[in-house]
Structures are given as C-alpha cells and as structure tokens.
Length: 177
Image (cartoon, rainbow, N blue to C red; front, side, top):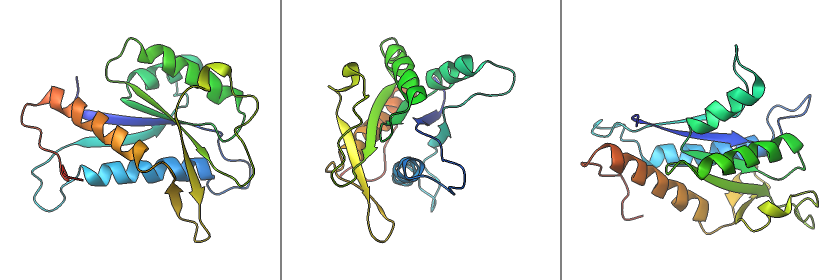
C-alpha cells in the first residue's frame, strides 16, 4: 500500500469549443473539498497525498490497458452518467469488475440534474440500482450536490479507512464534521 490516495474520474469529455464541462467541474469540486478536509497547511503534521486524474490512456500502452491500470491504481473512481456515453459505460464496467477484487476501490456515480431531464434512457440496467449523487449548477455557476453530503462523507470515509491501514496514528482533520 502506498501513501497516496487517488481519485479518478470517467465522464463525457468536453466538446470542441468548451473550456470545461460541468461533469469535470463537479468532479474537481468534490476532489478539492476532499483534499482540503485532509490537509493541514499550517503546521504540516499531516501528510496525506490525495490526487486526482482522469481515466485516459498514457503513452506506450493501449487505451484499454491504460484505463485498467489507472483504475487499479485508484482508491475512488467517480463516474458521471449525465450523458449517454458508451466509453463511460465501458469504464464503469471495468471499474465495477475491478472493485470486486480490491478492498480499497470504491465506485461512485454522479449526474447533473437538469430540470425535467431524467437519467438517459441508455443507462444499462446493471447500473440502475446504484445510488447516483445529483448535482446542479446554480445561477452563480456554483456546483451544489443534492445528496445531503452523502458523496463527500462516503469518500472521506474511504480516505480515513485507507490511511488507517497505512498508519496506526492516523488522526484526520475535522473528525467531528
């Protein structure tokens, strides 16, 4: 086990001309919250390396091998189901299969809640039983998750459990939150 906690993501990449899409904004938002809750910039008594990366290929490997390796090296994979994207569904299947043999891999599903829009009809039935955290983009462009902090608390629990396995002296910040 390494002293690094990795959050990876799968989502429909931005379309041409977009600066950043809402899926990426939402995932980076939750990552920043998690990272900030486990950092101690003032006195450096905590050293929890939490990083983020997209599921995509790397140089020298096939796309599929790269994605599998990135999922295997992750502790959390956040998958945005806002769009009906076949690549995201494949990545979901790979992550769910790998989760079965990895005690320190958790998969979380999110989607943007758009007024009147239901989940895409193309969502495979195997994913329909999972809890999906919904988020909105308010009029001030702020990301708001509508899940009573369920996603944040679940990922925080994953971080605590992971680092508890690394060190017996783990004492997270904001334990009472």
